[in-house]
Length: 324
Image (cartoon, rainbow, N blue to C red; front, side, top):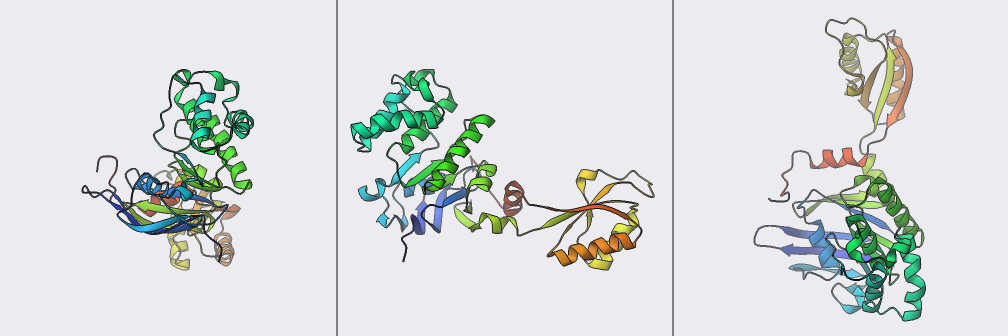
């Protein structure tokens, strides 16, 4: 049986104020990118801190490549970028990474070769010679990535790795993470930037109020609802009611087409929208539209974005939030 890179069973951290996380069970395979999602205050960072050995669980257990969390053996497998990072402002960026290399037991020859490569890869380059006090918040976050990767760890925990970066910086970091994934690294990504999770991750879990609501493959979870849009002309409001009654399907007038003017009998070039189960229903709806005298210009599937999935999944639930 292949050992999982990350294997947590019933992992729990309880606080008197009700925060923390409860009975989290999940497994992440070697070389997999895993997204950990949830509203602010859901308990995501608490869970990550237990995995990297910064917090002791109230109960439950977890292993990293077969080694119990908190053990020296497990910590040797870890690269970690925390959500809140602070570096010695009197040191240069290069010196900060050298310090982390020594703490990780990287030999001097390897560090001398690896550190310039890392600084270039994270986008710091020659600015590694500048003192940290002259770095922007985004530059410090890039520096933190270099520190997390300096020991060439097999498992990388990233807690909001792009939060301080501008759009170009986020794209660069995403490209870096994709390269790490290609090299076989296991990436555990705790992020509120849902696009990063959607593009990078193989699987994901959704945490709310300390409990996992759902987990699975990103592709499968985003296909839970398949929406189609149909651009038509010759449409009258009464036809919408007829289509619903005839098919039993939730056909609607897409919001993007705007509201139909009051008293209008026929509107040109509107978008109809429906959640459909298969392509047979698509063909059936196409035939009904044409059969009622409307002109069908195009029909297209609308892939659900992770942001929409996230909002749908947590809709109506209570959230602890930042102050809750």
